[in-house]
Image 1 (cartoon, helix red, strand yellow):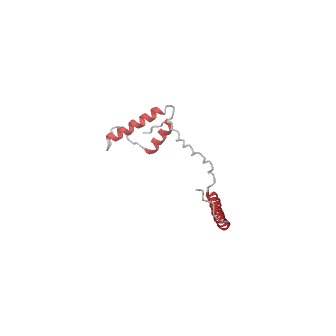
Image 2 (cartoon, rainbow, N blue to C red):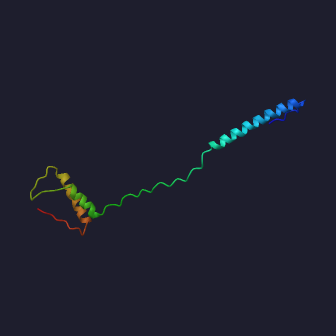
Length: 109
């Protein structure tokens, strides 16, 4: 704040001192209010949980899932409505049966 020249009489000095005291009181009050407005420090946030993907199903589980979704009924000389799709399904069944070696597979027909 710039320096003001000294007043010529005591009354003017007292008035100026009262004015400065009032200004100082206002500033102190404003600072006190501002201090109350400061938010409290943040609490540490727990890290996000680690999402672990489920384990890959075993060959036996994949075969069980396949068997639950497919049923193939045929006998010698059967003609299929969609031979290409049937061949793919039977190939997939054969792959899964081979992959699940040691698993009992019953073929009825």
